[in-house]
Image (tube, rainbow, N blue to C red; front, side):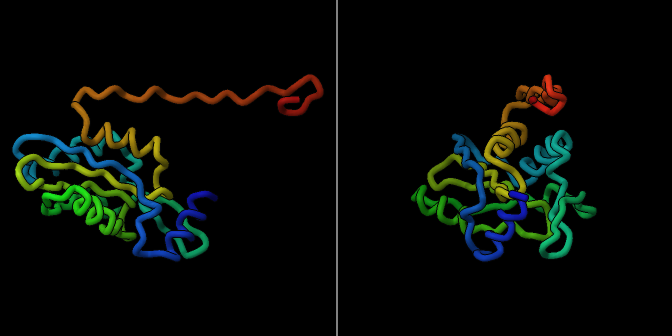
Length: 166
């Protein structure tokens, strides 16, 4: 239900990135090539099968399904750098998340004067903030990034009167 509400709100403002979330990581040193970033994405996306799901269905009845054309390289973009970090952020926020594929992307940003940035962005209907942070760590963090602990859920038992939580 919240996914649908987020998508309905986004449809009203198709060019607005207010419902996008993510992070920009800045790094020193020589920027990697597009091919190097693409190879890392390919290796790591295999550990995150949810990233291969796209929005499908008719308006008013959307659902998530595996993208039959999924290719991590279709989610990798490049932006030229700028001496002004605010200009870079503004340009990143103007970048769309195309609706014909899963609603996420990684941007390689070459910084003027050296260094580079890697930005992960996703639509809020696709991931919440905690999921986006975990994805960022798995995609761009060290190879031995800790695996998230599995969540466990135990429904509350029936209370004394025979109803849940009773």
